[in-house]
Length: 371
Image 1 (cartoon, rainbow, N blue to C red):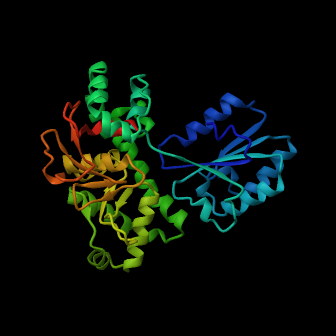
Image 2 (cartoon, rainbow, N blue to C red):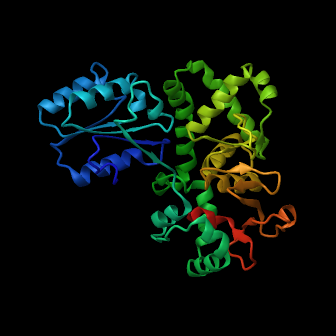
Image 3 (cartoon, rainbow, N blue to C red):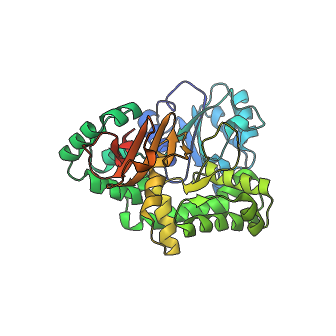
C-alpha cells in the first residue's frame, strides 16, 4: 500500500493468482481517491477489446482523470510498449497495475526498469494467517533469533496461544491465500482452478509459447505429485520422456518457478548450474490441492520440506542434513528426529514437527513461518 501511495507515477503489483492483488488495488482506490479521480478496469475486459490502453488513458486525461488502474495487465498483448507510451505521453497521470508473477518487467524490451516501481506480492506467511484468522499479531522474528532462542520463543507462543499448533496444520492446507476466509470447504477447488488458469492461460500468454505446450507442463506437475517424495531431477531422462530438448525442459521448469507453482532447489556448490537437484511445489497449499485432485495422500516429509523451503528466498540442498541456508545446515523431520545426520556440523539445527521444544538446536518447524 505504501508503494501504491508513493509519488512514483508507475507502480506495478506482481504476484500469483489468488494472493490478493485485485483486492489491494480496490482498497487503495476506495480509501484514498474520489470516484471521479480514477478509472479501474481489467486488461481482458470485453469493453476494451476495440480500444488500446493508450487511447483510454488519452480520453481519461482529457476528462481530468488522475489515476489509471489496470488489473491483470499480462492479458493485454502489447502492455509494455503501451505503458511506456502512457508514461511518456501523460506526465500528470498516475498509473497503477497488477500482473502475473511471471512478468519480468526489468527484462522487457521497452525499458520500463527506470520508469516503473515493481512490488512482489507473496502468499501469506503463517504469522499473517494468524493475524487474519485469529486476530493475533506476532512481530516477525529474524532467523538468528529463531536459531538461538527457539525454546524460549516457541514455549511462550505455544502456551499463550493454545490453538497455535493446530492452526499451523490448517495453514499448511489452506492458509497461504487470503480467500480461505470466504469458504474453507471450497478452498482447494478455488486454488486448483486458479492453478489451471496459470497453466492454460498465463504461462502461454506471458512466455509466448504455443498453447499446445501446456500438456507438457501438466505432465511435469503429474510427475512431481506422483513421486510423493521431493522430485529428484534427471534432466536427460525427463526431456527424452517428454519429447523436448534439455534446454527447453529447463526453460519450462523456470516458467513454472516464475509462475510460483514449482520451487526448484539446487544442490549447494561453488559451480553455477541451471539444473535443480530437486523440485518441490512453491507452497504446501498447492501440494495439497494437486494431491487431492490426483487422489494421492500427502507425504508428511514432503510437506515439511515444502513448507521449510518456502520460508527462504535463497536455500540449497545439502550433502549434510537436508538444507543449507547461508552457513547453517538444517535437518527436517518429526519430533523424535535426532542429530545423527548433522553430527559435527558447527551450525546444524533440527527443524521438527512439534508445538514447542526445550532442547538446544531443536526448532519447531512452524517457527520459521514467523520470519
